[in-house]
Amino acid sequence: MSATWITKLDPDRGATGPRVAVKDAIDVEGVPTTVGCAAVADVAEPAAADADCVASARVAGARIVGKANLHELCFGTGGTNPWFGDPVNPAAPDRLPGGSSSGSAVAVATDEADVGYGTDTGGSVRLPAACCGIAGLKTTIGRISTKGVWPLSSSLDTIGPLARDVAGIVDGMRLLEPGFTPSGEAASTVGRFRVPGTDPDLEAAVDAALAAAGFDLVAIDLPGWMSAGGPFATLILTEGWEADRAVYERASGRISDEIRSRLESGRGWDRTQIPAAKAAQQSWRDEVASAFGRVQLIAMPTLAGQPPLLEEGNVPNHLVFPWNVAGTPALALPIAVEGWSMPGSLQLCGPAGGEELLCATGFVVEEAAS
Image (cartoon, rainbow, N blue to C red):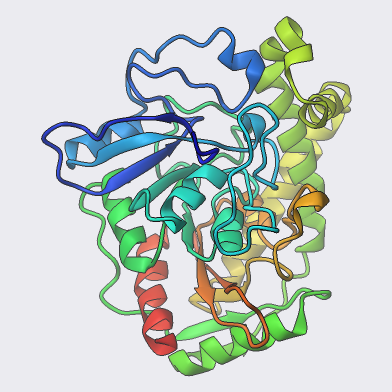
């Protein structure tokens, strides 16, 4: 079986809606949830009920076509998996597919699904979208229920859709949130944010896409951007340890070296840092909210360059995780980059609850690029 999937399913009888690939961190009734980890798979029982996000999809007529592979325990950005095999990036087979929601992205990119469900704690929807040349939406924290979803970090976890284009993202949001409708008007004033070290050809492609869309662009600075890494590390490592502690203590030998090391870092992390991390997170959220008082959206690349080669192991996520710390939504969109054999990715970032505006504006970017 293709390493895209951990469990392939027959589409629901009688359903006629979009084909949905569900990341195997999300419960599907009657199917074990493995989280891509042998220690979990060894003892996993069939889920007693659908996760809330799957239940809403079924009500809308979605066809659940399988549980997709992922980076083990959702705790990595490369998207490879030593227990269930590596999903192959269809945009560049010699490069990482991106994680942790790699299987969901690959299923969409290879037309095995119309919508992929992923989780995004530190970029895990947007990174595989960018690597595989498709679209992906990280939602506002708390907007979509995580009931029935294997946790990594309660302070950062979100659910979001992957699709080939913005229309598919809207379809995915309607499965997650019935009645979802893009804003009647797209953003007109967009902040342009730049992070040093990003590939200049990619930055030029982002500029070209924004210019073609006709936005009023405003250069914007985010002084707290670099400081967001501190609270991110503290929260994801300490909360990741608490989420997976029981698995580690029962069967650490059935967890890969990479993930076991990450969990052990969380186990040994100084808990006295947590209050300061929470305070820093709030400070960053306040700064981001202030920025969205000046511009409607913020634009930047999703990755700093092309996806890393397979042997590099992980995809740098320093252009995405600060938005998880902020709790705000962000949409990754494929764009053409001169000299690249695969698409690059533009990231549109919005204020809390701004998914409708992001989708409306994403349509404008797509149309301008066509």
